[in-house]
Image (cartoon, rainbow, N blue to C red):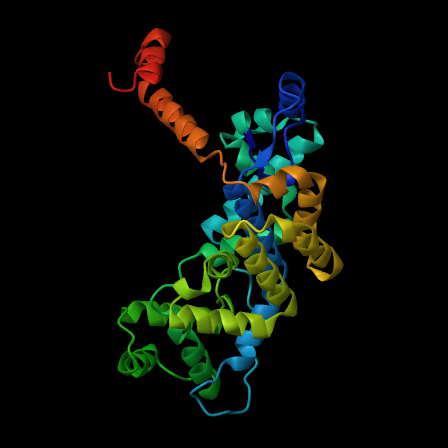
Length: 332
């Protein structure tokens, strides 16, 4: 009997108790795909917590083409009030307000027209982390690679430079956007409302994808960028090493090494990785079986997805008997 490892490292207690009562002699096998999914979540959370290390390292590595000049004091920049940032902020306030009134996850989802997973995410994640993710999801735009140059030229000229001249300069360096975008950025510099130039740092999700994939599948560029990330943050480096070792245990069925991996993670790993290790220890027998035996719940998951697809396709259009017939007789 296989069993899923659910997100947030928790199992649903009532179903598990029912299974043990109905089949006390059954062998529990944790699902490998969900184990790797939970591991990926722990790695991504580690990257989120240490994104400041990545930005600092990227800023130190940035080399400006413009020669150093006496700095010009610009008006303080305000945090840009973009649509996605404002939506994230209001959604967080709404969810936290309803939680304080002891609303359930399902009730909040119905009230705000949100999926329960989204509600849980806003419940369990700090506002600063949510806003950081919202900023990272914003498209950079064609001007983003040239903002550092524009800002340096603006400072060098003490603000006395035309948008047309700056447009021609960055156009010669590869800019293919409009002149109006450059003028708009220049006006924001003068007003002090422009967003600070973001360092060229990969998002936590992208870093996680590089870590979770086999190293031989990464391109040379991806491998080099991951190396820079490892140099920037020791905690991400430790999470990367542990994640790759665990993925190796899963892919090669080396369950006999699981307990040693857990001990190492609990000793010096970042907090999200320690949480994942604790989750494994709580259900050590099932996880060890999952990393040792060939059985998997993949076939069951496929049937569940098929049933869900049929339900969605037939919702409001056919009777339960028709749905039952299609599930039991897929050819018809």
